[in-house]
Image (cartoon, rainbow over all chains, first blue to last red; front, side):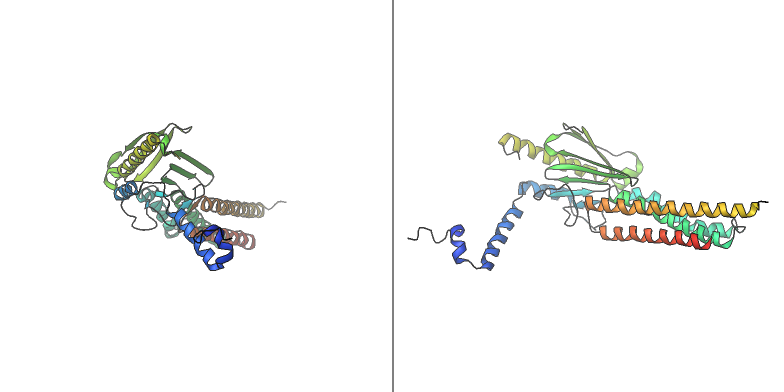
Amino acid sequence: MDTVAPDDQISGLPNMAKNGEVKNIKKEERKVVKSKSPVDPELRQKVYNILGKTKHPLSSFLVRPHVFTFQEKDEEEEILVALRPHWITNVGWILITIAMVLGPTLIKSLALINGLPAKYQILGELFWYLTTFAFAFEKFLSWYFDVYIITDERVVDIDFNNLLNKKYSEAKLSMIQDVTSKQIGMGQTMFNYGQVLIQTAAEINELRFDNIPNPDKIVKVLQLMREEEDIEAIEGRVK
Amino acid sequence: MFDVGNILLVVEKVIAILGTIIYLIFALVIVKQVTTMTHQVKDKFNGVLIAFSYLHLLFSLLLALLAWILL
């Protein structure tokens, strides 16, 4: 007796489906999981309308990045925006690097080290350029890996200071109590960057996003996300 | 009798070689740290940064060798 309904995929598969069909079904299942976003589509659209678009991959303001990810990210978690300090904060070390590159030429023109043997001069120059590269590289790394991330579930702060210190802090959106932004001085106002302070009810009671571009947009997005979290809590949809 | 000039040259050589060796260790720390950083945060330019850290290590090694040979 055939007690299995013809459209019952699970029991029908071993006898009927070829390998290709099984793969197709698995792919479809995966697609469904991928498109299952925990964020309300309307809210998500609102958030992306506020944030705008990323102009280039080295931007300090990566909206919905495709390549960017971090180790602690959950599979279904969506990164809304990844932030780095504003590019203008790099100007200081770039100018110092240029001065360091020009240093040996200046010293030679002033004939300050002519008394040293030639081999010491060559080694000294090579050592100087290598140190200059290391200085610039370290500064770039400190900027590149100083990231603040806002996902649909939490805010994350990853810091690498002076190559030797690593700091990771995060707070769930539902734990955020208060968000404030600060823009101090002419530079921050002109280039539209500043600090965002996030007070939380978590163990780490404050997260600080330093020198990030468009702090007002970040505050608005966090407010929206918090409101959504509150509605979820009221409706009992808390994950 | 001691030749002061010779002693000074030896001291200079030892200091220079020690300096380049310490720098080599620093270059190794950079490689290790870049690997850790790129493991933690993945982005488009991670490969380039790893390549730069290894290039820096290679040049530091060459400098140490050069100091050993030249001085």
